[in-house]
Image (cartoon, rainbow, N blue to C red; front, side, top):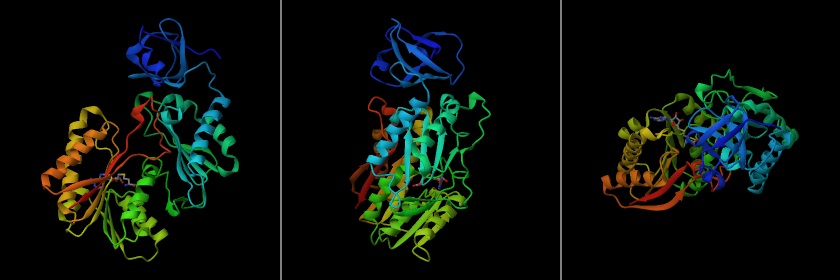
Length: 396
Ligand code: SAH
């Protein structure tokens, strides 16, 4: 296969030789031909050595490398990459109905498929492209995924309107690439708990798969406690807290749609259980008027910073939110606090929480430092893939 060629400036191949998959536009010396965004290109060092093959992009990242050698991006390529991603999830025991069938099958660079995310919900895959290259490849990927999973895959829903670069001006309508789910509410199982997943209307791919292991840890702390689950979305933490034997669980989200998803998921697993109540309210307002009864609080807000330039504001946001929780939590309470902003480093986040704690002068100890689960693997050469940070704190 002949692909358009991109030549780097002298010495700009160093990060690629260390297997980092991004080529920044400033590193490019010249481009043979006029590749369109999303085209597969070959990348060469200034001395003419082939460095890899990837998707061309317009923007600060010029190429996302799919491979560091000479390969053809064809059916065999997609099949091979997807198989290796699937093998990892099988090794992790995540495709294991009836106990668990909710997991991330592909996590971008961590699976050597930059720009692609696939979440599995029982027999349905929800696919998300973050690059035009992956958008163009979506049908090939769907074909390979079908071959890999056979009958255990009944539908593939492609949902990328919110994730593709807006400049690309594609007519990218979200749609089914395979099958079509028509059975009403779609249920999937995470660690033995049932969740209704709505990828059509829900945020992201419909569910936050990345908190699975952290929810399990929460379950172990929930026994006998009065739990406040802030930013509950589909109520994942709430349902685990219920199973863990919580005395009461209150879930809060500013979106009333999220509150009804939470109520539905609690009812699916714990019908007629009056320990749970949900509130559609702003988190800060709720915390302001909340009593001092909670002894287990979860703070899992949306990314406060999506870009570097708003980092300072984001850190203020984390500080204020955590300070409000430290003020309210009962002595001996446990706080699960998270940040999913990629641009907020582990240290930044810890500093924001530290500052919040110091403001209240309560004694606080770190019991666990949490991150994203193994189905969101981070390539050691691409630390940017790490985004989820959490602390479990005991507050005296
Ligand atoms: N903890 C959830 C994921 C949280 S996603 C899980 O485990 O699945 C973030 C949620 O915060 C979204 O549902 C969003 O509606 C909600 N949200 C955003 N801003 C908010 C605010 N100011 N107050 C309360 N909820 C908010």
